[in-house]
Image (tube, rainbow, N blue to C red):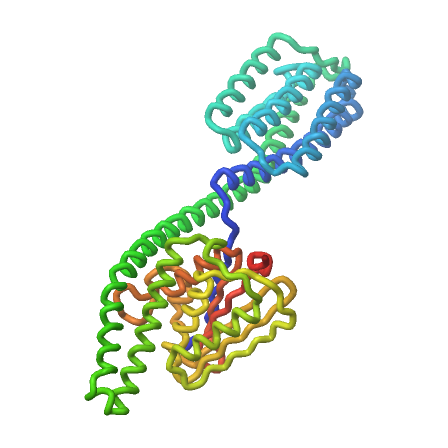
Length: 438
């Protein structure tokens, strides 16, 4: 089935732990708090100016400016610290919110205590803590905010209102309440939306990690199954090799040229099976670096192409290596099997024509395999790299691209598949040169 519009890419992400994702989300949330604090500084300066100049209310300007200076200094320090450091824990977020609560308490103490309508800004701190912090930390913020409000209800500097504003005191309080509500609502909508976006991104990455862990567990099980099967196949393959050797010496076979040719081909295919079994055992028992071979890019790929041409029944196989600069690298059995897996899948879909192109752009090696077969079906492209996604209708099929994707993932590369406009399919594997260099 051809579909020239479909294109699927499996982008490989670097391996990372759940704690790293949590720290990353915490870092983004810390940056949001820093931005919010700058808005708080601007809002406090504007409010002090408005109340003093617009309403004629006398405030202790100098102490309030000292509090603002401390908040600005803390925010500058936070910006410098978290610009370099990206690991933010729950305790560090808690400390940042505690500084905000302390600053708000100090400003309210200097401006009327709980009689100041802006006392409701404590709710903003409580809601932010509920979103950002662990449960025990949130309850700590709630307890401290409550204690601060109770303290402000008993101890605070009274506001010095102008003589002619006594009758309009309720109106001033009502206007302050309205401004406080609008400020709370705007800040909550704006910042909670951005914080929730960070949390959703973290959850999506955690889900991807869980999926990857399940896939790797599946690979381990398949590796154990493959190594066990390889051990079991060793004895019958050795027996067949002995039998074929005996047949070649029998007169009825030696005198028949056609039978001799067929025996030669059987022995060649049997040797190939033994090499495959040996490769499976080597891959299962040795890690990369221990089963690796020092070579060069062009030498490895040229030998691989020649070996593929010699061991498969091919009508037309086009191999083009456009790598201009050959460099020393390390290749292992798993990587060779991965490339051959892509080629074998293409050969099965297109036995009449197959192309293998190699290109290198700076520090990226690109391997492109194209064929003239029926192409990928849309549901295969949508689930590229997932196990048992195949149109072959055989039990256990659909593992080829699954293994390809997981081998490439270990090297930090990408695998993409698409249907060609002129017919057939193309699978592209990109590998960073840094993962292959000596």
